[in-house]
Amino acid sequence: MLFLLLVACGVMPYHRPPVPVPVPPTPEGAPPIAAIGPALAHLDKLLGTTEDVDRRDRLVELRDLLVGVQLADPKVQERVVRYAERVLAVEDRSQPFGFAESPMEMATTLDAVVEEAVPEPPKPVDVAARQLAEGHPLAAIATLDAAVGAPAGAAELRKRAVNAWATAERERVGAAFVAALAMEKGPARAAAILAVRDSLAAINARFPDNAVADDVRKHLETVEKELAAP
Image 1 (spheres, rainbow, N blue to C red):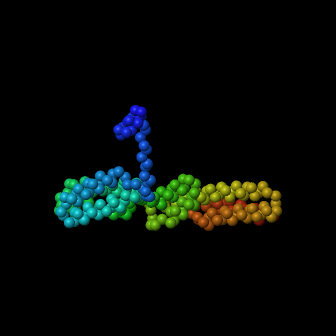
Image 2: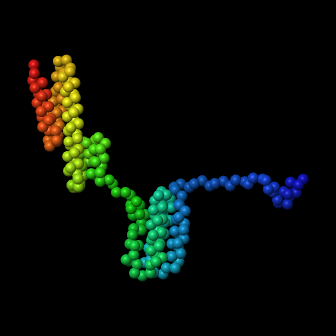
Image 3: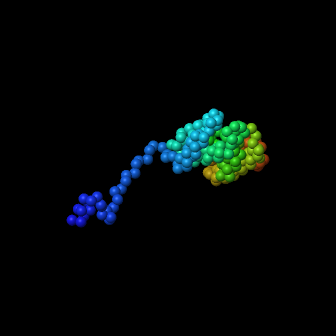
């Protein structure tokens, strides 16, 4: 009976749980970050007190930038807001006239601001050094050969890469020669030794100035003698 009286009087029991409020779905694209709202309010306040035509044009462009970035990637939004806050701080300090010498001579388009956030590509010498350290001397040589101009340190790094490849190739071919000598005489053994000879010759043909060129020539003479033996 008491419950019916409470309902009739419009009073609900205090222990009844609240009705959950549905959360609206997230729209397509990233939601605008919280800092965009204050930045727009600050900008609108300046627009309301500015009579100088050029200054108003700059502020309108900045406002368009903030509005247009609201569905962009959150990181891009953050960068644009930081840029807008710097510009607005300058506008707060500046006089309506004589503004051309202020830091507002910055990019005021979304593309320009985003472009500032793109890191510079790594230098070819740095890429080649990493490739060489990871055991890919031929890749390092190709990177340096494709570099425009003559980057500092490129010649010395290329020389190191050439020597690293030639040394490793000489060791590989030398091991193949030892394995070929252990084979029984016959067509297969002869073919293996011929392959060793061709590989040795290719080292000096590809990079004549490598650090082991003389050693490669001596190995090549040994292989030729083995091929000539009955």
